[in-house]
Image (cartoon, rainbow over all chains, first blue to last red; front, side, top):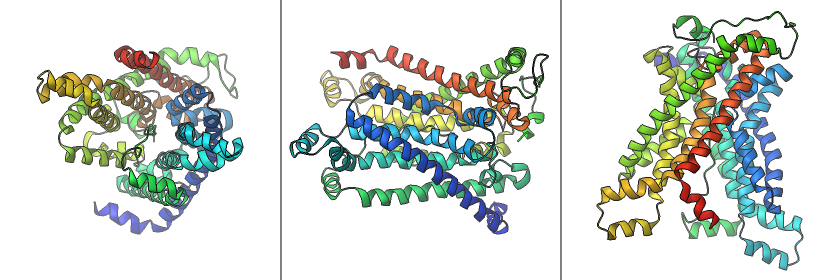
Length: 232
Length: 242
């Protein structure tokens, strides 16, 4: 136990460096997943079509084992940042996609009708009505996605991308169990910290009306379909 | 991470034959290698992978159903268990497996402890949600018929919780299949073994073979669980179509 605490002090510089790269890689992968998933999910939810396709794509991607993607990637496009990014994006993408789609499609039809009656165009309905009301569910998708990506980013080592906390986690011979647990602890803290930050962002972005509604009817719609995990 | 490979004496895979007679060294995928090594490497590791997954999910299901029935009327237990479940998913899986190595060694037991823990938490959450969200009318009808609280729990709530439990099984099966590949770096079992071998040798045929087989296992398992789900919960479809 004492060697666990000592590891932080003895390897502070190394840990700081690896943590920074770990964060950068995870944020990058999450950003790519979000940029791909939100427009696609929102557009299809807005159209109220192809829902079977979205659910199927989400389920298939969700079941892909991350290490298998890395392995096939090594053969097809080699070691490095592209390999691990592809694997992490595939891990995070389906959560954000299905949540965005479910949220946008589930916006009260009466609200959408009212917006149309006010003369809004389809684009205006999507950006001013549907997306703002979908923020809580989209956000929960992004937060879960972040937790999985951060906890899985250590596989970068096996994808040939050095510099993440995976360098320590995958090298128990070199750093010992205390080192592995120290690096894992940082990874856990990153997961919680990111989740908390995204929670703050969600609060800031959620329209006031929606927030008041949520406060007035606690637990009524507070727990939407939970995003299914697929950690690796 | 080749430590585990030599230290274990388990009925496992033979060392792969790298260059079959018909294989060029720079070939992306060599079918000849695949067929040569299927009976000795790929086939056995696939079977092991299925076994590893089944053991974890079945043990996980038994424990979590018992825990959910226990937690049903004890909310302190439920919230504690759920809090721990959220925490578990933030742990890098390899570190989680390694934590048990000092106690159970580089063995199948170590892998199964880790994998079962992951299923346990998914299955517990879904079982408990299922038990709790049974329609009030069904419970009231049972009460009116004179069923005791225990009878209601086992004869009414448990069957009606099946859709939720099956959804939990579905997620935990694909999760375990994915995590079991990583577990191969702790104990050399399952399809993760050839994947790690190939990562160290950068042998593209083996990378693709093992990777694609793992994906196939996951996809087939997902389809099978969906089939099972439809089989044991026919009423959910009847309600939707009527």
